[in-house]
Image: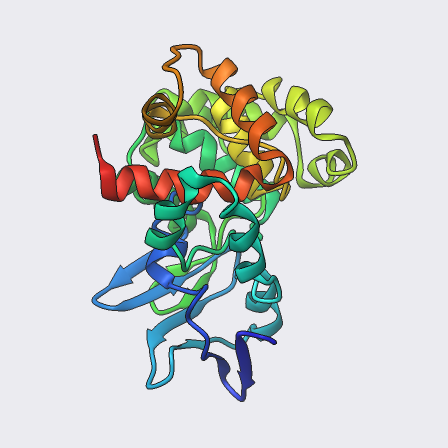
Length: 278
């Protein structure tokens, strides 16, 4: 049974057991959103949706209905995903805490640029840099938001431009990466097995292990990866024999959760960062 109903000017989410905008947008997977009071504005690529509470669940106001059905992963049965994950005792509380998480189907190129900017950065500053890029090079899509820049526009810019956008030392990486790859190449890479694709990503300027795994999960939709950052490191050392080597932690977690690794990572990351916090 679908969790949504298509309306003339958007989507109505009646079943909220696996849909919560705060869980979806604040679990670390995306930066192209803004929260104002209890309303979320989502603006991936050149699209816009306004998500607000309704009498029955949530209403998603958008003219790009089919896009957001896919983007919000609305056709996936997350109750089934959660039931599979509940076989792992360490996920029980995390799933209960972030029950409304859905992993977004993001554009690969936008994901690459966004997560290079995210390295050693905080959400507020990441969003500021990305919004500066959008305002400088993207077209208006309404409500004060701008489209993510076209690849051709980004490729024309020099390192100083990216510094002016607030990217700091990442400006060099951004300039280099738009010379290294283009959206068409990334699309070709999507046919590669995860291990080979990860090696390709690690060859890009500004892409380390954690950023590569985030791009694999959020851009290439690979569920057999487990991004390890400070929060996941803490989480691992809480539940398992403590380790300092994040590569070993990554391998151990992928081995444990297999094809459900990406989902497990999101529930555990959100729980560790927003609930446990130590």
